[in-house]
Each structure stands twice: as structure tokens, then as C-alpha cells.
Image 1 (tube, rainbow, N blue to C red):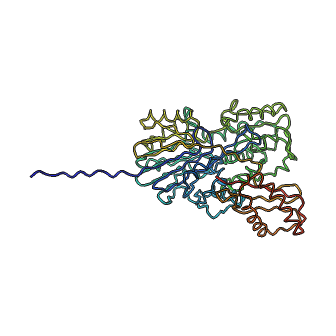
Image 2: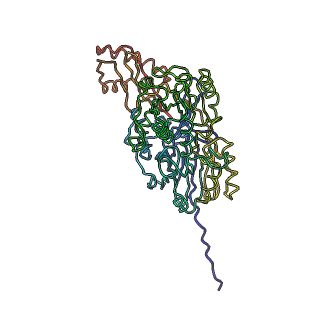
Image 3: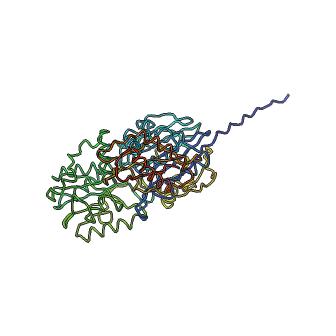
Length: 542
């Protein structure tokens, strides 16, 4: 009698879907979705700014393609609080309505933005970097990394037997000014990593990114001998650089001034989270003009040439409270994001025409440090975690190609260079291309951001959503009446909800015009003398 052998075929594990909706083939606008067993999570939801278009509109990821395929994330997880990772949340979240997970600092930044747009802040859930949490089919473990803003995290994402590391933005800084350096032992202990979605932003740069401590030293050396006003411009959310400016101001006998609402808001929120405790007392901008020039160190927004930012207003002498003069110095503690070369060149030309000295990455490269890993840092990091496969994200095609070549030289598999709209499927061994989603650019006019208006009259800001039922109101309607006029906001909201369904077939521009006229009559019928009506309608449809 022959022996019978029973062969057991290993059960094939369900694949992990990866849908890239932003941040590939470009710098900024990061959004990646992961799908497993019909459950989806989104990681980051950022924007980028188009300086080459009128009013410098924001571009946000196209959520319509997700809607057409019936994909709605069950959660949104934020790696850190930079605008290219959180700046589109208020525009896309109303379509999703899911929990939003973020670290304490990023959660506070988002809560401020949600409240500003009348959205529900109770959906924001806080995780501490290092603490794991579950979301449906996914186990997510945020791993602290060093970046130019505190509480940045890589995400170890487990779904079934798949283990993927989504690095977010990171660098290996031995002497960060805010927060601890990366814990090498933690990353060495992770064990087998199937797939890494890795930051490619600095993959073309040899060597090692400079430390923030080195930038602090270089900035101090540059500022110390100057006798006029000093303006340092950087991203509003670069808290490490703001911290450096405060230390330099104190060391050189200058007073710290902040110019730009975004930077002022960022500092306020960061201090509420316990950061920037060593910052000296900040002098209000309205008082800076009364100080001797050699006592002023001003941190300004606008390092990318944004026409409405503080630096542009200073360069063109449009700042009401302060005027730059010959003998003053502007320091660009930033690098040029591809696509912003011309606006920055125009800004620098305007400064030099007024005999204001300019220091930037061309003549003083040591005055800025990238928050992203250069080639030597990538090699070190991959030696720690030993991934089997790399999917290069976050960067242009040239950055991704350089990242892929570096990984392949280390024996790491990979051949895909995704671009926005790519739907990939990780089987556990290889990446398969499922389809290419057709994405349409979506631009947001920044002039419609919620703000108080100094004109006399009633300002009403409504967030609206368009679906098969037509237009509907979402979130809180913001009502800003002129002094002495009391508006019943509940009654106004009920009236708007009655009006919108009848206008469901019209484009938003026509809806706004009709509602403005009807609102004027609604006020008159109630004997409310509110003056001119300014109605802003923000379309949050994805």
C-alpha cells in the first residue's frame, strides 16, 4: 500500500491597495490611500500654492475620482502639521466625514482650521507619537521622526500580514532644536518591513542634510555684525527656524517681531502645546517701526514669493506698520520650491532695487537646512529597517528616480515610480498596476478664506456641498454683522436651508447672486438695516 502525501497550499493573503492622489511627480499636495478588505484609510491631505496664477490659488487633491469609485476613507491619519500635509483637509473632509487622527500639535492646528470653516472639531482624535491605535482593518503605529516641525511621525501600517512603512517627511538630525533625534534602536527593532513608501524630496542630494543646530550657528554669525533691521523669511510652519530666530534675537540684543498671520497663529498654537518656551517676548508689528533699526529682528512669511505675504508687502513698501530702508538685510532661510523661481526672483529684485541686502541659498547656502533626507541619510535609514521593496513618493519624477536607483544599489527591490492617480496593488511580493485615475486640478481662491471684512455691511460665509440632491449647507454658517445689528443665526440658517433646494440646478456663481438678492429682502422684511450684503459661498464638494 503506497503512502499518500497531503500537500497544503498556503492561503493567498488579500492584497493591499495603494492609491496615490497627490505628492508624486510634484512637491506638495500629499495624499495617499490604503485599502484592505474594502476598508480604506487616507494618510495626509495637503495642498500646494500656484504662484504663477492670478491670486496664487491653492491646489488640492481631486476627490471626485474617489467619489466616482465609491471610495470613502474610514479615517484620515496625519503625519505632521505642515500645510502640504494638512492644508486641504477642510476642503475634502466634509465629503468624507471620517475621524481625523493627528498628534497634539497637528490636532490643534486642524481644530483651529475646522472652527474657522464651521466644521465639527469633535472628529479630531489625538495620538501620541509612538502609541499604536486601530482603525477597522488597519493597525497604525506612529513612529517619531525628526523634521522641521515637532511631532512628525512615520506610520507603520499593518493590514492582515502586510507591514508597510509610510515614512512621511523626515531627516536624521543629530541635534534638532525642537524634539528628540530619531531613535535608531526603535527603527532597528521593527523587524521585517515588506514595503516602504519613502520620502524622495532630497534623494538627488549627496551627503547628509545640515542640522538645525548648524543653521542656528550660521544665522547667528550672519546677523551679529549687521547694523540695520534684519528680516528672516521662512515657512510659517518651520517652528525650528522660528525658535532659532528667537535665540538669535536674544543673543544679539534685538527684539523679535513676527509678520504674517499664518506665522503668528502657528507660534500661538505651538506655545499652547508647550513649544517655543525660550522665545523672547514678541514685539507687536505695529510697534516695530518705533524701534531703532539695529534692535529689530523680524520673522516674515513669504519665502516662496507669495504676493500677499508679509515679505512681498515689505519689499514693495506696502506694509503699513514698517518700512525697510537702505542698510536693512533680508535673509531667505529657505530653499526654492520648484515652480517658484520667478516669483522669488521678482521679490529679490524689488528688494535690491531699494538697496536692501539679500542673503539666500545662492550666496549663503548654510542659512537653511532641508527637513528631508539626503542620500547618506537614506542609506543609513534603510540599513536600519532593511525593507524588501521601495515605492518612492513625495517629489518630482527626477527625485523619485534618484531614490529608486539608490535603493536598488542597496539590494532593495522596486521599479514603480508612481504619479498622481496611480492605483497600485501590493500582493506581498510585487506591486501591480491596477489603473490610472483621471484627475482634474482643483483650485481654491485664497481670497475666499474665512476672514473678517472691514467694509460696512453684513458678511455671511456658507460652506455648501453639491450632490445628486443639489446644493446643501454644511458646517456652521459664519455671520459677521455690522456694529449694532443683531442677526438671529438660527433663523438665518433655517431660511438658507429652505432656499438652497430650489436652486439645485444652478452653478454656484448664479446661486450666490440669487441668494444675495433674496437675503437683502429677507433682512428688509425684518427691518434689519445691515447695509450691503457680502455673501461668500465655499464649495467643499469633492
